[in-house]
Image (cartoon, rainbow, N blue to C red; front, top):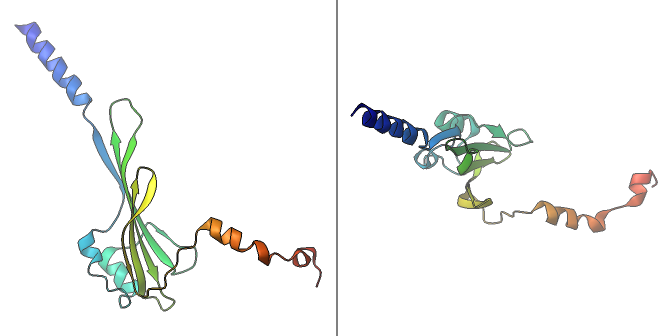
Length: 148
């Protein structure tokens, strides 16, 4: 009878050790908090008090704020696996008011737009490749060599 209890106890400990453990990294404001942000009216200062400071910012001062959050699954001795990632990008106009809010997700290794709120309809997304190919005809070798 004692050996059965030991076996049951050992199996219980073994099963508990194989249960996945989830860890959250970063911060993404919930949709209810983002719904309070008025595109075209909310300022950077107001946004900071509404949803907090971002995890990272754009290269230009005041251009964009990025909130990044991910969820990782740890299972036994296997490598941790990222099961969810969300990025909220808040873009600002030159006067410091919110011009656009976008939410991105990671679906099978691809970035997917989950939601987008924009003030004007002429927003264009130019990829890096398109920018590089667009500059091919604008190259002037005289400018590089120091000529007029």
